[in-house]
Image (cartoon, rainbow, N blue to C red; front, side, top):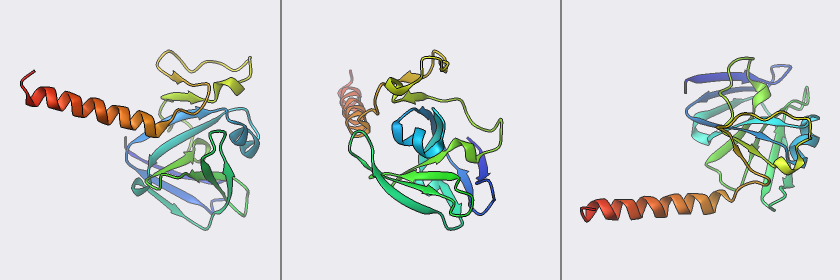
Length: 157
């Protein structure tokens, strides 16, 4: 993925991304309430790939899976900008910061149990989750599978 540039409504907060992103649509209660809409496009990426300029303000909430999440916004115009989670290596950027036609299509849709019956599907290639997946458990499974595959290759299998 190439470089992306975005900002809040008033331009006091600017965001530059230079790296890979995972995109998703979130229907969680907190995203609904902080955005004022039913679904929020997010870009998840490595903290090291993001440069946020300006002085956003933040507040801390607990997600439905009890993780502590800090939601950041522009103190001038109120635009939501990003969120930080227990994993300091990742940051979530609100998709609305970026110009039209610059967002990659979503990879997943989260908290679909909260989705309105009239909301459209995002296609067959989108992972659909009623809750937020247990990212740590999934990463451990991938690591375990990778180690098992590497052991098989090392043994000539």
